[in-house]
Amino acid sequence: MDHIDPAILELALKHDSEIKRLYDEHRRLDREITEIDSRAYLTETEEFEIKVLKKKKLRVKEELTRKLERYSGHLVAA
Image 1 (cartoon, rainbow, N blue to C red):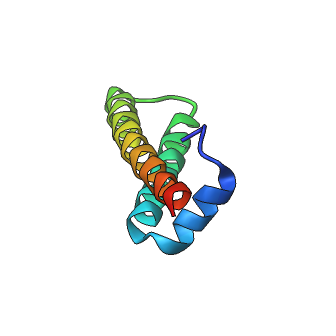
Image 2 (cartoon, rainbow, N blue to C red):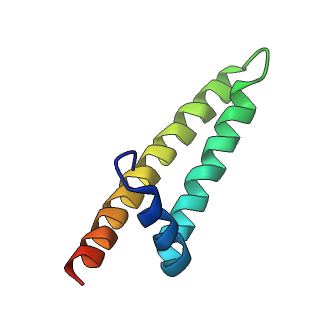
């Protein structure tokens, strides 16, 4: 996702509901991770929860990146 043009991302978010859903999910997971990780002390359960959330966030990012690459490819071809 880091190599996707911000203009293409903005366009995709406006016109593709699945990309928008994935983007929102990625941001939500990031906020959850940050909120838990900012605590002074983490229980073992919280540490495990962070690991699970990070894995989910990565899967969402990978899917979002694939969809954005396909989306940008369609724009170039058009």
